[in-house]
Length: 77
Image (cartoon, rainbow, N blue to C red):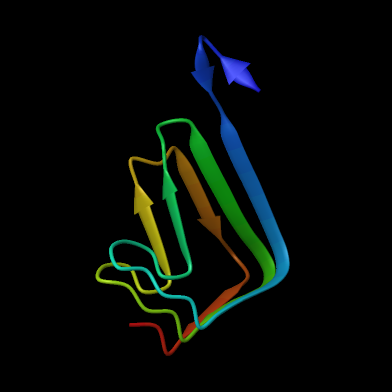
């Protein structure tokens, strides 16, 4: 999708496990960046034992929308 010459990214997660991921910088499990980016964690999404310098589970930067209604975060550093 494209809006006014800007790429649009949308993600919808359901029944996903992000486990034991590592990042040397941001977001051990996931990083979402972009003024037109949006992400939804809606049902049975688990972030477990992810590690990063900042945002052990998830890092959001300059993001249009994030919706977290069905996620579990545990043991992230």
